[in-house]
Length: 476
Image 1 (cartoon, helix red, strand yellow):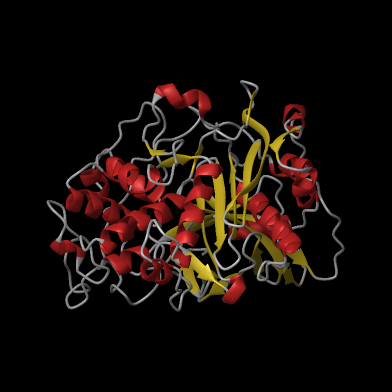
Image 2 (spheres, rainbow, N blue to C red; image 1 turned 180 degrees about the vertical axis):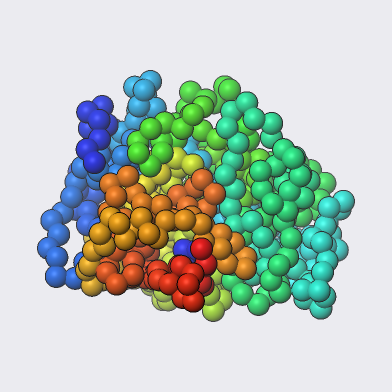
């Protein structure tokens, strides 16, 4: 997930991935063949689409879905290829990269340490960091970064996300990542906006959480996560393992890019463990969702104290709880987090008052769009509110106009690149080499994000092309 948003006919072998391999009743799968676009043009009629057809259209080779009901895993569905070229199908133990969903799991571990008094939400984190600390400057004077800032993305820290490292590339250690030193491929993690002043998504911030957890516990981060979260919840198929051990490579899904091609080397490694480094299954993530719901309800033996869990699921003015997004109220209260690494997209949702939830994981760059359609269909079947399609007024843009908008756009805190899609009729938003969204033209320089329904504008101001989305202008 990134701050800027908040991430043709397929070959015949991809068509074959539509043959189901699933656990669950036929009734449980019915909504999966009643899919509609998340963003819909007003006045246009839409026919239901089958999951197999959407996987083909979006070039998503494989998918794994888990539905939670009555506080337990009710059904699972797996479809398609974990590795298309090797003819290896997705099954319930296929490993996917959780990407930014790693942040939510990390936040829960930090909150267990808050419950024990080892961490405090409002204590300056530099007081407990050893070696590297967040560089102080005029912005932090009187406004020190706290754990609460970090897990709600209000720390003012740089580095929205990470691109990973292809096989064979040297992996940086934590100090190099935070300092932006070789072989790290990111800029330094520093404060360039006053802490607490705005919400701005930061993978760099969760890398600070990773160091904080390790420094205070005196143990490697991956061991702490296993001891505090993964093992107690029975998440036996999960680990903050980067690179993935060779012994597990045969269980891992291969990452597939936007056009349906496998990523060179199958998948990247993400040493930024807290921000993007969890390998897991939807079943294990469902166990985590259930654990948070149990803690929220005050059930005995839960991962967190009830008041901590309720604080976790209380949104600030920007819709962030402690490590998760939060929306709705009453029976429709929901917490959620998505994930987007190269070739992996996913989403997890919990509805604690209903004791329900959903986890969707895919191994394709357009899997987030597919997940949105699936979530929308299941929400309709279950009567969840807040998941209706986003209706927008339709329009179009000629190819030469889209070409005019291509280029790199910069704000005071980040940059992105706009490119025409392979089909030439939409614009893609990229941060570094990572595609984070697709913009559909509405006409007159207006576009809508195909996943969230957020409207963006493009046009000239004082001789410069300006791209504005979520109230933030970026200039080419």
